[in-house]
Structures are given as C-alpha cells and as structure tokens.
Length: 176
Image (tube, rainbow, N blue to C red; front, side, top):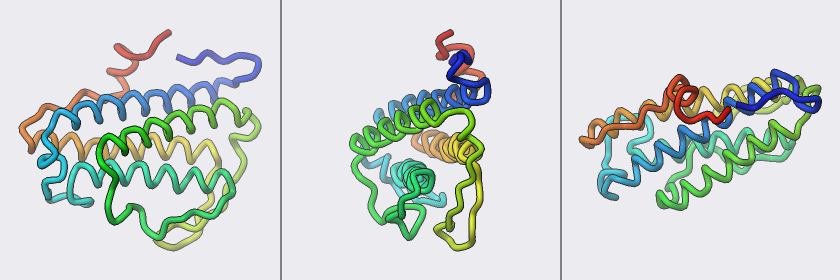
C-alpha cells in the first residue's frame, strides 16, 4: 500500500495503489495464459475480440490511447484494437511497460494535477472530457472488465483463471 506523504495526497496514493493492483492482476493473468498452448490462446471464441490474445491486446491499446491523451499527443489509432496483436510474450512485455508508465505518471503528476481536465475525441467518435484521475480509474475498471472475459475464455480452454479480485490483491499481494 502506498502511504500518503508530504508529496502524495491520499487520493493520489489510492490511485497508485489501484494501478499497482491492475499491474498485479495483469501479471498473473498473463502467467495463466502463458500456460496454454498457442492454439488455445488464438482459438476463435464467441467474444467481442475473438480470442484471448486479441482481448488482452485491446486492454493495452486503450491504455496507450489514453496515454496519448494525457500527454497531449496525437494518438495513432483509428480503432480500439489492432488488426493483428503481437505475440503473447511481446504483448506481456508491453503491458508491463504500460503498467509501470501509469504508476509513474500517477506518482509524478502531483496532487493538484489530478483534476486537470483532458479533452479528447473517442476513437469511435464523440468528444470526451475526463480528469486525469478519472482516466486512471477508468483504466483500472476497463482492464478488470476485459480480464473477466479472459477468465471466461480460460475456463473454455479447461484452465482455471487466477483470482484477480481486488480483495485477493489486498489480502495476499499488497505489501504494507
């Protein structure tokens, strides 16, 4: 758990903790998926993104889109996923880098900057307006939502998904 200090307000510490939870859940999910055969990872399934790898890639793409938004840079995406995801090991490395980036951003942005409003255009069209703190909370929720689909696909592959609940993280993984 990140304790508030003179440089971190309680809200900022909580966002860092939630982003650290997301990184932990991502890591154990990738570990579980890596136990599957490549055929199972890519097996077409009745789900929005078609297979496990493409679903995990979608999480990364959305986080990269929002990274561009908070940095004030033009995004390079015209969709919320790429046509072809990278291999699982490469995607896992990208996700780990992304998780570290968001945790560092939350730590370094400063408490007063959490409420900075970010204006952007959604990939699907329409104007978006969110604070930096709202964006980070969205990314935690978004990843949790799609990891749930991955968990279902792991069951379909006769594998048991890891328990990625926040309560499990708080009990077993978070270091005081």
